[in-house]
Image: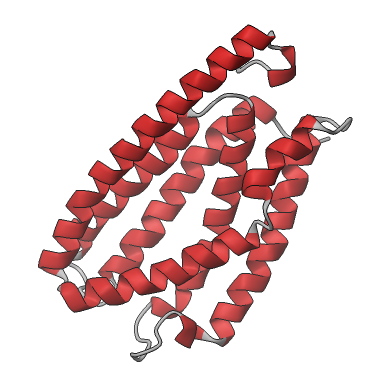
Length: 210
């Protein structure tokens, strides 16, 4: 179990922050490299037009997820540092806020799907894409809580290993199953994988609220 940041000496705290920064940079490079196979697979097996259409829709979904966290992705650490409440309760309150924000964002995208696909018709499973908002929002909040406890490795595992490799492998396999819905299903699987990779260390470190 990671030590609480409040229990660390100033020197140890700075060392932990420096280590976290190095891990975070390594995770960024690793995620960038891991995305390349997906771009190659999607471009070759689904076509440039399908990839561009998918990328625009995902951009809107991920932007909606950022709004759904209501600033808690960056602000949770400040909340945890200046509260007398048990940290587990603060973290789960943040998840509740994220769920409410995600519900509003998902409802908006369900009602106005043209925001995701402005120049084309919606077919297949594309109308389910907004469901990814809550997975993204919850994963971001959980990883922020873990980062406050200096567990940056959880972010690397979820965002730089599980998410990109899941979408790459799934996109390759699903290209032989459904060219129409393969990218959507691959993205959904990657979001579920990242969420599970966030939940496991979050519950292990924080536990359940009482």
